[in-house]
Image (cartoon, rainbow, N blue to C red):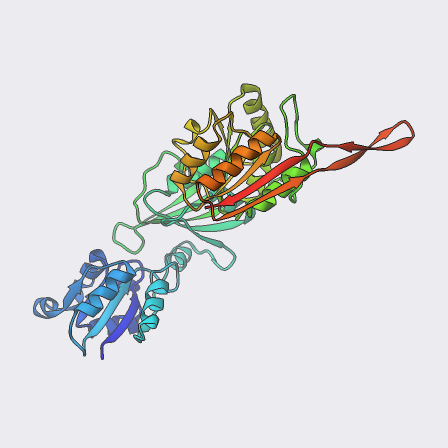
Length: 410
């Protein structure tokens, strides 16, 4: 029976590997892991012994399983190497699950995480930090910093320290204190301290992490879903009314890290409420009318919706440079409803739509599109809201135009 161990090797320097993990590695007859990690352990053996050890540079869990099954030997001591700590945003979670499903037992030995290593180097306690991985993941760094006094970010080649700092500066958080660790534990390790605005133009190694501490208190009012119409700066641009806005957004089922489109954004009331519901995500408000674009920007500043980006243009052409959305609200289509839906589905087939329709013709078009494109989950709600108003000494009913709310997932 194969003896399998998953071992966390810390940052990469063998000095940061635990004694028990080193003992396990030294008994290995087979090493599986990234070439960089395996080569870093070469110094543990003499040349002859090193040559006898089988090596496989698989990284993905299923590739590792294939490597294990293809070895053909029953009594090998197999050590699978994981960077950092096996319990800290590690491939160990998925791999150990796959092994259990195949009734393959394994021992897991933890390592030192980049979080604990960097914190110890700069004398910080990480217990109160919000821990966020942007490694191969989407996310809005500014949202995390706004919601927490201190945040630790695990980064990658796209989500670099400079990109995080640029996001912070754009959200008015440029004075936040940042600690950036590059190539931790290696001989060329580098740790930088300063304000976020100091590092926007800097270049960093792809093996980087950072701690951000927000400076000062944010004077941001907390809003629940259903902001009063009177709180928005209105102008002469049409606006989705409060009750309709509340039901429409609730039907989207927004998650904190969602990427969302608001097509035909008008005053931006829906976009702003969605941005507040997705503090770690991003909302793109697409609008063609210049006066509406200006109004959205004014409301964005009023509500401090830092994660709202205004796109001046016509849908679906305006989508071309945008990331794939998780949720889409369509309040206006300019006659391009089908083209809009098709292009969004091309970006993400699993997207969820909420479409508001006032005219029966628009509703009929939406129903036909849902049927033609074979949406598996659809729902249509007819909503009629009546408020009251004072007329002299009387309280009168004041009906708002009825509206249809169409919901669909493919």
